[in-house]
Length: 512
Image 1 (spheres, helix red, strand yellow):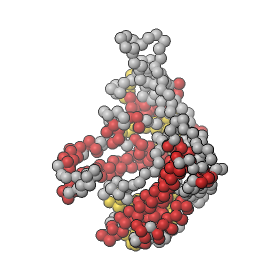
Image 2: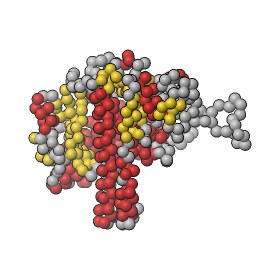
Image 3: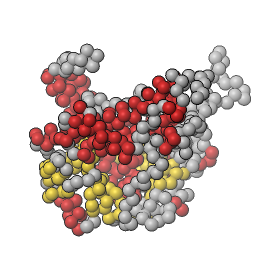
Image 4: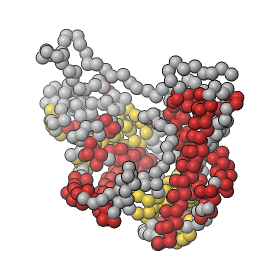
């Protein structure tokens, strides 16, 4: 192991929290009603977390910049400034030394709980770990850039408490370190009873500001209780859509629908009026340092309330829809949609985002496990809408404008969404060996079913040659190449990251 590797996130990887046998980790979000003094304390703690994060980013990147400069001077590796570790224990030790010597931190650091600074340092350590894993090709998704400083204007206000006095004082109050007793907006008597009976204990509490108000998110370890589904032997296939949010077809042949309320479309008139009022006021300008006027802040608050109401209505509708399905059916089959690609279509992006397909599937995943059922995810390229649910023949083409499926082989006629739901429900019969998701069951709760009948992954017709009406004989549609994360072959961590970023092509390292 190289010296740069040992200076990164540390040799030993800390294991995540593991719940006790028969318990699992659950989150509960409670709205707060803080008074004026608590509001100031909450804002101060969240600001302290942001300051600690920015300090850690500057602390680590300073050594990167210094080593890059020394490399251009021809200084050998042994004589350069040593790497600064971004592991959480190292950042804690360095910050505890700096808070007594740094003039900026020395004056006010004692006003907040140590948990506020630990929140920022932990977030910085996680950010550097994710950046290093992304550069090495070990992290899925889009390549990450190096951590940047958080803006005071844009940063999310959040602070996490893991130690100290954390408890639910009664059904209407919560006690947090340095913040004291805070009133809750809602009744927490069920949580108080569970803690008193020994079936729950609080692991951590995160206070954050979102949608115009403060929330306390309790991460708890609860005793696992499974409520079996009322129809555990019945499977249901769910077809997601924009016109109708859910079309459910179960294995008994019954078809039901859940309408898409389209809350965002309903609020467009109010948003246009509120946005027009905001545009007529003097807003902030970062280039000139202009501060927003009071009238702009009031108009912006009115517009934000419209957005917050839409988000709350959407969340409530999704929770109600996803709570009934796992409570009734033992097996739920959903399709794996390419939501990221769908939102690129400017004609559908707004309605696809309003439908929240990703959040719907996330809720179905954990609620299915809560009821001891199983969730089956069909392959993304499965032709569920183009396959006849009666005879199994796959149509060559089925445009989105055609809302009724007509089979050319057997003459079967059915709504295309209901037909897709029947095909998805049929996958449950072919995937019965995957387990139930109950605690102790060896089978996984989430199963992915491959596409049947060798369905093609490219359903779009190929473009014709210029000047001809049809495609040339023997020509095939051009297939796109699959992109993968590149794996880092040079060293680890900071040395590899800086060399990839700063060295031009063809440049050689100076020899000592």
